[in-house]
Image 1 (tube, rainbow, N blue to C red):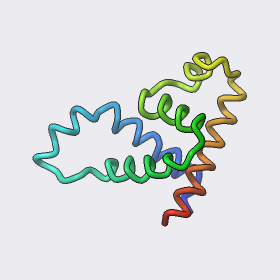
Image 2: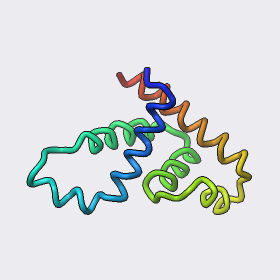
Image 3: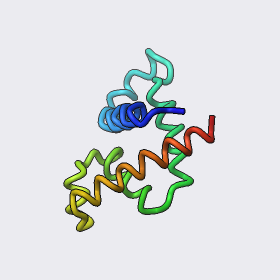
Length: 101
């Protein structure tokens, strides 16, 4: 089972993947599929089982690279509530990824 710290590190790498996706596409002729691309597929498969609210949170935090504060402001969530939702997302991923392995 992945630890929550490993989940957080993976999510940070996934965020970087989307930030640098265009640049990575230029590297495809020189390197095979980057390990983070495999992580993205694995996490996206897990997110297919997530509640809608969690999918939206994942999208804004990881794919759009918004901060927790910005997502909270967008949806009218307090800082405490957004932290709670992020923790729920991490726990969901931990259990879902564990089931997949």
